Image 1: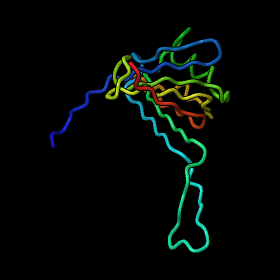
Image 2 (image 1 turned 135 degrees about the vertical axis):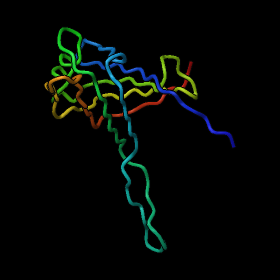
Image 3 (image 1 turned 120 degrees about the horizontal axis):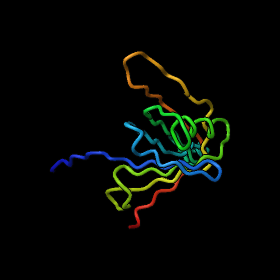
Image 4 (image 1 turned 180 degrees about the horizontal axis):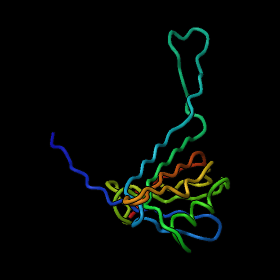
Length: 142
C-alpha cells in the first residue's frame, strides 16, 4: 500500500456576531478533534459493555501569530471569549471541499479564556487559542 504525503495549508474562518475573520494567513497550527459522548446501553444478559453515541463533542486548538488592530487576531480573541456562539469553518488544505479536503463547520463553540498578550524580547509572539463544545458538520461537496 502506498503512503500519501499530506502538506497542510489550512483555511481558518472564525465568525463571532456579525464579523468573520479569515485568519488562515495568521496561524501555523490547527487541531480539530471531533467525537460523540459514549452512552452505555449495556442490558441484562450482555456479556460485555455496549455503547451508543450521544451528544457531539468538539475541541479546537489554533496557534496564531499575535497581531493587534481591527480584524486582527487579538480583536477576534477578545470578541470570542466567553460567548459560546462562535462559528469556525476549517479545512485542512484550501477552500475547495472534496473527499481529500473535508470542510468542518463548528457552530456555537465556546472559548473560556483568551491569550491576548505573549511578549518575549526578540521573538515573534504566538498564542494558542482553544474552543470547545458546540456541534460539528463535515462537508466534502465541491
